[in-house]
Amino acid sequence: MQHKTVAELSRELTEKKISSVELTQFFLERIKHFDSTLNSFITVSEDYALTAAKDADAKRAQGKASPLTGIPIAHKDIFCTDGVKTTCGSKMLDNFIAPYNATVIQNLNDAGTVMLGKTNMDEFAMGSSNETSYYGPVKNPWQSDYVSGGSSGGSAASVAALLAPASTGTDTGGSIRQPAALCGITGLKPTYGRASRYGMIAFASSLDQAGLFAHTAEDVALLLNAMAGFDEKDSTSVNHPVPDYTAALNNNLKGLRIGLPKEYFNAGLNNEVAQTIQTAIREYEKLGAVIEEISLPNTALSVPVYYVIAPAECSSNLARYDGVRYGYRCVNPADLQDLYERSRSEGFGTEVKRRIMIGTYVLSAGYYDAYYLKAQKIRRLICNDFVNAFKKVDVILSPTTPTPAFKIGEKTSDPISMYLSDIYTIAANLAGLPGISIPVGFVNQLPIGMQLITNLFGEAKLLNVAHQYQTVTDWHKQSPRGF
Ligand code: GLN
Image (cartoon, rainbow, N blue to C red; front, side, top):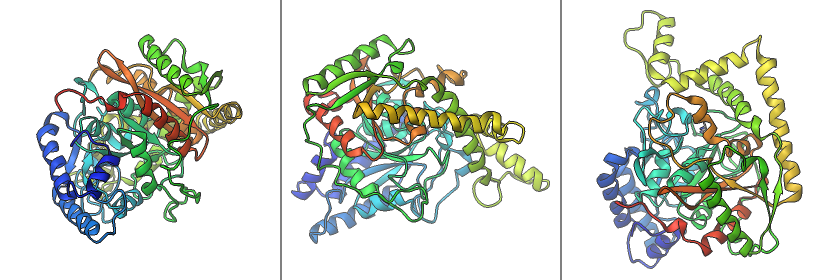
């Protein structure tokens, strides 16, 4: 049962081979059994899940079901969930219970999905390894002394370990695609503005985007149908029609132009990862795609630009955690200044503080032009690289990460080397483009991900290109031993 995809589970529910309550209980049992070592959940919402599952069964009995009615799902703990704790991986919000649902959660609830719980993540989504979480690192299900990736490490690991058939995540610089790659599953970051950010705790508002994890592109398509859409509560969500993302999955790829950015296949890329990607490229050739080399000349600037813009926005967004309104408050403050200082210094972890410091610095009066404004100008150049590339090709293909998963603790004292693990993913966020990572093989028994990027609102095309690969390969069907 745990190996079934969302599409298969949906059929089982329709054919009444299983009820949503049974399915939900089954996954709750698996979480109980396996998650004490994996650490992929911060909160398991058993009562909430069973109530939702009963409702789903009742809807199915009345003939009011959608394809997702009764499907269990896990949500990244960055999305506000009415009545269920939302921590964002931080001590700052360890006691926070939102009085409303994020729009993404509401949309998926309305489609009938059943929330199993809230998944572990890097604190305020800042990290690439899930090691900055106040709740401890998430283990990689393939090898437990390796990282799951981040920041949506819990969402990726829970799906890879078959504790949930699918999950939500967010991606500011790679936080869906990178952990999807390191855990061997499929992860989609949609176009900026495709899904609402309302009720999704803000890290860097011009980059943050909600997305999905599942085993297959087909499952992601099913879920994106429910999740995407305009929301008047988010002024940056875009009023662009939501197609049926499952409709184009079976289009053939004859003549599809795939570009390989030469800057992504350079010295920084691990050799065995490069070979694995080459094998995947040959599959696309067999499917009829035309491969050509392209150039994204400003690639080397994307990490430095990101680490000006993202911290700038985070320092502004995180100013709201002041110990007064909600979240952590220090004990016995001497005065108001002491309340602010101690609540923030005790409530935030090291990485979050580092980002707030950098962000405050680059936004300060004397440095704004030199850093922040300059970074915004280079961001435009990076966007233009993609505009030029998409005049020549339909899809850009690359590795998702330069190496397989690294060991827990290996990069914690070297933030720059940690930041470089997002070298291939960050540019899509700076340009607002949709990107997907799909599993394409293993190196040293650790999964490898391939990234596909396309033009704005091209999710249907991306899912089609990913799905076609998954019809001729079975990397997405592999599961880690012991689960
Ligand atoms: N790893 C990147 C960072 O630390 C991206 C995080 C994300 O996408 N949320 O900021």
